[in-house]
Image (cartoon, rainbow over all chains, first blue to last red; front, side, top):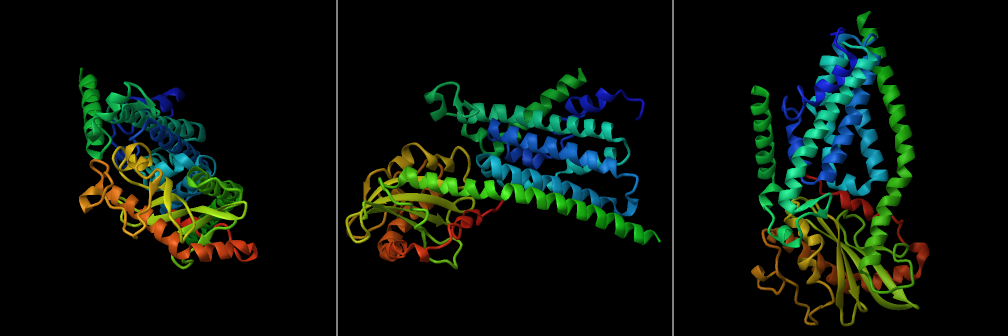
Length: 200
Length: 219
């Protein structure tokens, strides 16, 4: 592990091990928060922050944490950072906080965060762990943004709430894209495309 | 003494986390409060008739024990009652509660008119139920005279005159219920609200009704 170049710790999370589109982790919030680009950016930013901070914290104290109690400690740290994000969003971005609702607190049980803490940060140094958290968080955010781009564009005719194809398109938009089935369809097609490209 | 180490490390991490959270809570408490009150004040300003009083200071919670209670924000102009903004909560939404601020024109015992409405909070399906926020559906409630015989607004499916949102009848019903409740609340509790508002010392703390907005979270 130590021989991997530092930047690789960051970039692996973006493409080859993209948490959402390749590892297929964190699917539930991905279905729920990709109805608009704004939501996807908000959710993505929250995940990046929590993944990075929890990785840093876990790797910083990894030498004094006994194996037997590491999981409660990870969960405690993650929950703390998630609450920080949740409160800050409520205070300074009330609109976004309202539309993301429950999914910000639910980052606590997001498997990506705990998986990176357990599988990577607990065994690696602070800098590497920070980059790893930043990378997997960013990869997840990019996945969300990609999915929400298609969903908002086709389902509501807008991007960032700005009309793209005009009013007539919005009135006849493909409603199913905004609904949960649209999330499955979009995600499935994107993942299929990625698999196809990877195999070539 | 491995157990002692568990205890010390766990306690240590917990204390640090708690301290961090306490600090963040303290920093954000003010802005969160303000954001909530801003949203309410904005809603009142958007729907209520022209007024020169402070409706938030004169708010009247109909049933303080009920977190989903309607809240009256009386509007007066030059001491004369011109109407009110009434915040009502319907539990019949498709996903959780639908909270609507309804602007009414007229005294509680006189001829009433629904001026305008604004969705304060809802978790309805984006693209379907959320159409209640703007466009054709809520526009039906602009400048809408309240039937003097006390009959309620209903969507067409229920034999009324309101066009429901296509694909979101449940949301439309919840929204319509909010408007009906607002009218009834103003008729029944308007006089009490005005009385309470006249003696501001007795008025409720600004926040007692605001938290109700969060009541219906169901993921």
